[in-house]
Length: 71
Image (cartoon, rainbow, N blue to C red; front, side, top):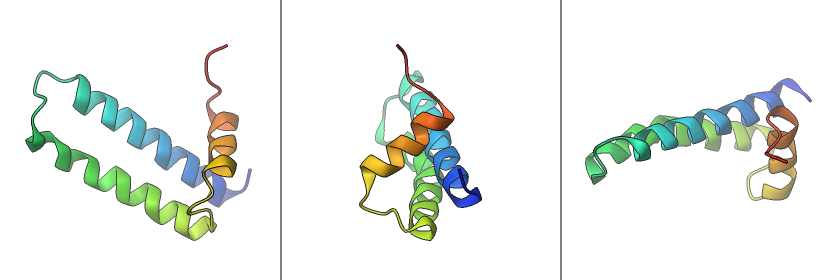
């Protein structure tokens, strides 16, 4: 995995962690949604730098290399 691929996969995993924390919290109001702005921007930037914007299948293969799913 290249440095850019690793950066994109890590940014996505940070976004997932942040989204889970925000959505699992006691407050489920639209006021918490701005907390996702930075991690979403990081993923967008990393995918653009990698040239993978719009290529979800290839990107999710990279993510699976970094953090395999259950089973």
